[in-house]
Length: 395
Image 1 (cartoon, rainbow, N blue to C red):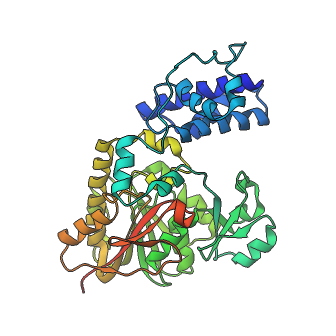
Image 2: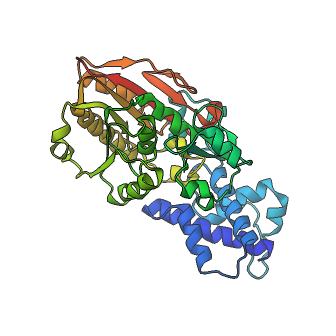
Image 3: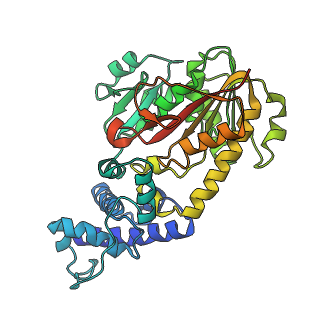
């Protein structure tokens, strides 16, 4: 592909991504893979170049652009070589017209930027949300040690904070590594590893991971428990939860049990666990504002109404979790969001709605105190953004 053809391909993909954001369609990575699956003439360098252009445009635009071309013009404005590809030749975008409209530059839609600033993020912290993520993995201590993995992978380095974390060069195909297939390593952002430590799960305990998804934090809990005790992983998403069983088998996490929940009927399904769990982890559904380094187009999918619905879901899940914790047990609340309305404000709501519960201080290897818990931020901590709090049930 010629450079102009790469730019035109990026514009076509951006139009598809924008349509998916409006209509709740597939993620950008999925659309890019589908696009090139039908264009075998594009070599690996072409695919990489087009992908880089697409993500450069996504990261540059704050509000959702009207067109892919409007987004790409932001990239062209900052890069004369890209601007030169708008030459109107065959398979190239049309020449740039005088005063042609551009997408609005920024980190997020204006309403969302305002909400993030109200949640204590300054300009530098906001800018970091649009950066690029590192490739972090967690060493499975059921199978090996971090020192052994670092010795086996010369290109790896220890993460700065998480005790079992390693970092690989971006672009590494982790699934081709023998250590991955042996269950010795799992892809997991360092921030996710750190907030999972708040559960402080111990061998022999009974723990519920109430919003387990595909099980990243579940597997970390199993390792912390040294495969002793009972670990129940629940979710309402059948497809996501189905990915946990093969991951647990590969990791040798034998204490993991799974339970598919019916939304609004969780208490009925979990009746046998009522008041019996030593700890419940709630990694609640949220806006994902802390994960934009990995999914930058996700900010175009959010609306105030969607965030409000997520807050209602968070309160519902917290209320279910509270019924499962034994007297004196622990509840850990996590969101990969930097909005106070999904973080510390939800903990304040929980404390008001559940008399007798108390906040416990956390001592984590990264993050800073924020409201009723600790917040991790990409700019300050080099991780995805998270809020985490630990609550103690009345005895």
